[in-house]
Image 1: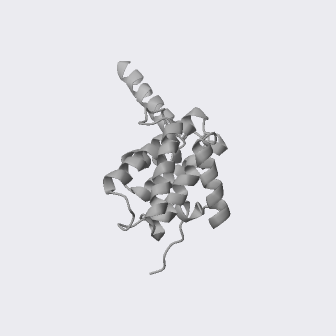
Image 2: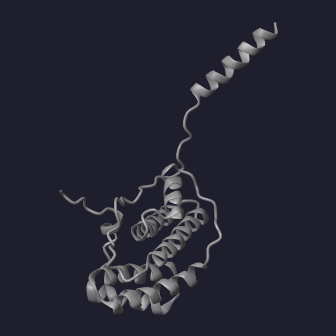
Image 3: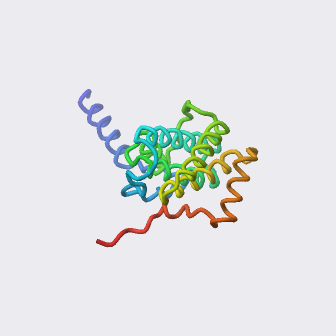
Amino acid sequence: MMRFWQVAAVFCATASFLGAEEPKRSFAWDSPKVMASVFTADLGMLDSEREEYATNLATQASNQVAAAKASAASLADARRMLALALQLSPRNKRAVVVNFQLSKGILPEVADGNYSPPVLARLILTRGQLLFKQGGDENQRLGRFFIQLAAEMDPKNEDAVYASEVQRLDHGAVDWASITDPAEKNP
């Protein structure tokens, strides 16, 4: 009789395991397409600095999505931040983990970051302005991304908003698709 109940328990467990469906995603995540960084060694940033910015951007993206419960706007902002993080450091642990979690429909946990959003916005605004002054195509390109992102992260920061709008008037809108969905190069 004991053997019968053991066989029945194993059968029920196997049936429930095989019949279980993958849980439905509560939101749709379109992962940024990053095969290799668009920024080369010519970029005026040290590798450690690139890694630090990537970690902070990924943490900010994760916290924003978690706080907004994966709203469409938070996912769009997070996609740009994660794309920029992965472009700065394609193997950044925090950026890779958050991107993976979002692609599986998992809402990331709120993590302690080094900076609050307004402080991070001021930091990337200042760094973006410095990169722009350094000159060079890559520095100016990243500087524009940083300045635009600073204005979006903290719209109450008048300096960031002003710099972003002047940049838009002088150079046009920032092309986020160039880092979120870069065109594949033909061999």
